[in-house]
Structure formats: structure tokens, C-alpha cells
Image (cartoon, rainbow, N blue to C red; front, side, top):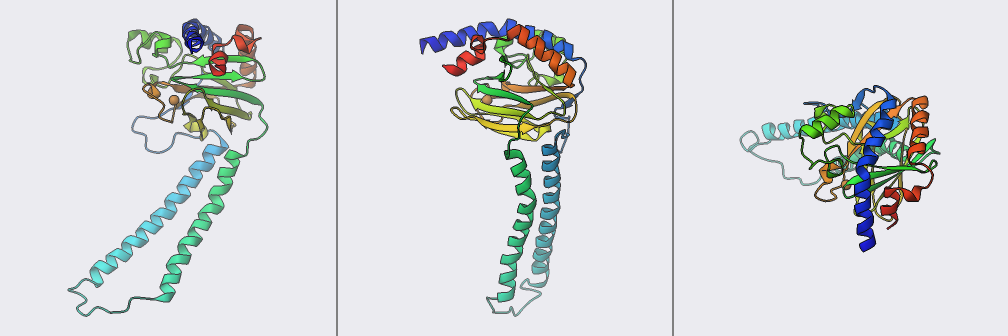
Length: 303
Ligand SMILES: [Cu+2]
């Protein structure tokens, strides 16, 4: 236990210089459009940039049509009952209680509707859950309250803190220092609570497999624009995959209530060209490569 505390403290003290070095690495990625984030007064989903996200949005629209038709149909039936069969309009009500054909119909028709929906939703679900061979495999570990990433084929790992979290010198509140850090890292002020000191960097149009786990409690890793979300459960290695089709910056937030700073462990993913990714990776390997056991993320995960 004492060792664990010591390691956690070491990880915290290491985190700050770590983070700044990482942003320096990321500056080589150039200007990226910030695509995956909420819009002021936005109503629908964020723009989807993966096949999975397009599938989910298509499915949602189809379901919207079906529930609209059902709701209108039920409302019309209700209206007919209210108007034609109220006590004033219908002085001598009929006394029958059963109607076999209609009872069969209202059992069979909903079944058919559900089978129809299932025929479209199950393939979408299977596509998400059948994990393909990844071009890049990244292990992500949820901690109270930040994320750790390891590029497992390259022995590169780092931690990712919200800009404005204590590890970056803040207290979870927006102040001038946090504004300056956001600007330095290329984020706008309204991206506070979404922007992190280090980002996950992945190549565009490549299959990325994320291995998702938790070190302490259950967290959940998600990027809405990719259409992915996976609980990070301690003791389990779950997987998700995506293939982002557009270069840009994408944000997500821990999506499983995990403790008091649950709202302050966002996720930033930068999708870049293959060349930019290779260059970033080479620099990251130089900076932190070699022995993953020297990495704070690795140590805390192991203890
Ligand atoms: Cu969390």
C-alpha cells in the first residue's frame, strides 16, 4: 500500500514535465480542424467520421421514422376513441370483450416490427463488437481521474490529464493560467473540460484497436464522433475499434460515473496523416521509448 502511494506520488510529480514534453511533440502535427466536439445549441449527434458512427446515425434515423409512425397511429386511435366512443356520443356501448383477429394482429405486428429493427441493428452491433486486426493497437487505462495510454507495439506510454487538472497545475477551474495553457496547446477557451495535455495520436484511414481497462474503478472511454464507447473495467481487457476517415481533433469524456473528478478526465484524439503519425511516433519512442516499466502509467497499472 505504501509502495502504491509512493508510486502514485511519483507518477504525479512526473506528470507535469511529461505533459509539456508531449505537447511539444504534438506541435509537429500541424493545424488540425477541431471536429469532434459539441456545438452550441446543437441538437443531434456530432458529425460522424467512422463507418460505425454513420451506421449508428442511420439506425437512429430509421428508428425515428418507425417510432413516429407508431406514435401517430396510436394518437389517431386514441382520438377516435375519445371522439366516437365517449359516453355522450355513444349512449349504448357494445358489451363484447374479445376480438380474436385484432388480438392476434396486435401481438404479431409488434413482433414483426421488432424483427425488422433487429435485422438492421444486430449487424451494426456485430460490426462494432467483432474486433478486426488492428494497424495500431493502443491500451487505454482509466484511473481516478485521468487516462493512461500505451502504444503496445512500440513501448510508448504516457498519461493524459485535463488541462486545468491538478497534474497540470490547476484546480479543475478555468483561470488565466489554464487559458494560457489551452492557447499554448492550440485549444480554444470553450474546449476547457475537453482538452487534455497529451492526446492520443492515430493515423487516418487505419484500423485502430483500443484495449480498454480500468485501474481502480469503472470508467468508460468514448469518442462520440467515432461512434465508440467502452466501459473500462478493472481486471478486464475489453476492446473497441474504429477507423477515422477525417483528420482532425476529436473529444470525448469519461462516461461512467467514477468519483468526484469524473467530469474532469476528458479524452482528446488527434487523427493525422500517416506521415505525421510516423514522425510523432518516432519522436515519442525517442522521448519515452525503450522500457515501458519506467513509465508511470505502467507502474500504477501493475500495482
Ligand atoms: Cu472516469
